[in-house]
Image (cartoon, rainbow, N blue to C red):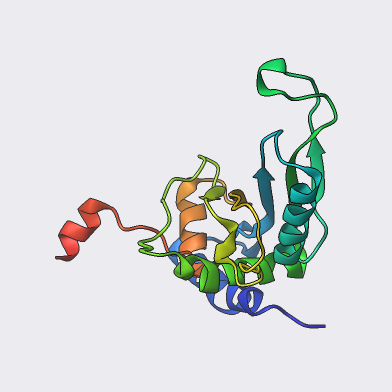
Length: 188
């Protein structure tokens, strides 16, 4: 069975480093990544062909088929009817999750023009959500086709009990966090 590169890094480098730096007494206390959720929403004006193209793009990114989310109720101000597609979501676990994270950290994020790091704000329970404006930063997306650039949210759910543990885990995995202005002043 193939072990993904990032999972191997987690097991051999990140776990011992977290065990040492945070002073755990049991291996089961070390935080781990439980799942990665990719969400992409679009307006009610998107046609069926656009929805299908976006579904194919997200499927090529995730390595598995996404679910099309439909509107639960009608809202006349937004020209939205019950049952209309309004978004796409996919939950990644196991090898698909580790492979996607490696492509995100090592390939897609550095592909962004003038990239200075991702924001350092976690949700208070050690989970991290990253918003991406254009999904064409991933190499799997064919930019030659005529399509609409769509953003997405990527949520990394961890078993960390605090933001400090979650931040340490993500830093050791290689997530390029933005340096605060106070850290930049101290480094200069």
